[in-house]
Amino acid sequence: MRVLVVDDEVRLADGVRRGLEAEGFAVDVAHNGVDGLWRARETTYDAIVLDLMMPGMSGWKVCEALRAEENWTPVLMLTAKDGEWDQVDALDAGADDYVTKPFSYPVLVARLRALIRRGGVERPVALEAGDLHVDPAARRVRRGDTPIELTSREFAVLLHLIRHKGQVVSKRDLIAGVWDDDFDGDPNIVEVYVGHLRRKLDRPFERTAIETVRGAGYRLAADGG
Image 1 (cartoon, rainbow, N blue to C red):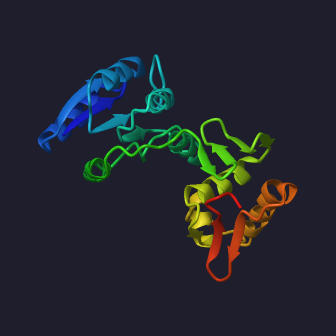
Image 2 (image 1 turned 30 degrees about the horizontal axis):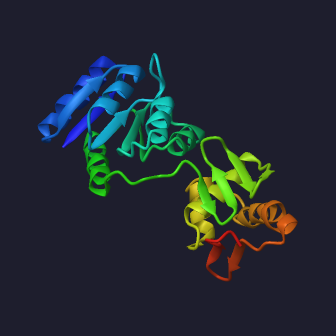
């Protein structure tokens, strides 16, 4: 299994390389985003370990460029940036997993192996449910040709629902995915934001895309309602 490690911290990158080689991986290393992108284009890898903040080109931009070129190699972001919106931005840019520094090396290896087992799965730039279009990277939403303005939190709720379109998503899953597992506010906040989305996505277009499944949660119709 061949892995590319892209990180401008030379000692850390070298430590990850040695550790992965001890686990049987073949490892290439780049110390900036430009070189990392070049290597990812020139060589077929089973996975890429990618830092976010690097000279020349950030990890976000590297990942976005690869996905725009339909390169679906699994990407694990390894970074000191631990903010929730940093993670959202990285995953929206096309990353498959996110690990913060300092990190547990056995966990890093296990998560990397899990990504490789799943392989590179195509992830379209935009998500669709009928005529409802969501572009995670640009944070744009439209119904047909009509753009719809959403707040950051409304967008996050919609993104979680459309990624599981046709499936029931529980209130707990929405809270964990949009807020976090430690959220201790009123769980009815989910109903509030679902109501906001219905007023913007459904009612003006006479649709019923977001269904309440009593006792279970919410479901976004796969056909957009």
